[in-house]
Length: 232
Image 1: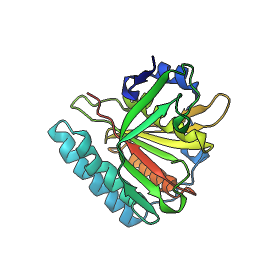
Image 2: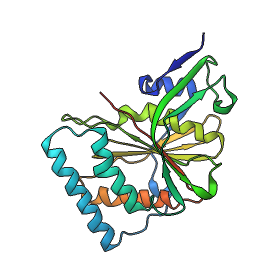
Image 3: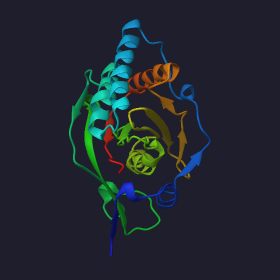
């Protein structure tokens, strides 16, 4: 009988085994991206984002929805994700299933499918048939600060599908305060690299965060999908 699993229920070992995905040593952003200096206006915008988030963070638990509104949405706008030809739309479900050609991926157990819920879909209008090179996973932060690595299995599962159509894909897991980028590449076996973790609360980290998002936004044939996950 076919088995359907939620990406959020998978461990990192499950993802490695099912997707035959191998981790490489931590990489550097500059190996893949050109990071341009921020303008004075961008730095002022970034400071406001940091202050808004800090005010809510100091008051206690921040929900997934507030993380999106307080940090992700303004950061995406500042990085250029809201500019033409990129268009934000909505989608409910992404399915990865070995028994369906449309969603076929190479997994060890052909009776297993992976299904997860998506909230945000941004597509480059000029390249609507290509795979998205950037996936964003938002996890709910709590008073004790949920570790962003808890979202890594889901992020890798969702982003892995894009490797069917392109040689590499970027991913980001965030709880609003901490940002963990990952870079996946085709290969035998396919691989992924974690990038240095960034904190919105640290001055140099926050600048690097916006620089990285701007650089990813400027990638040729850009598209972005953003699945959302609540970590309870």
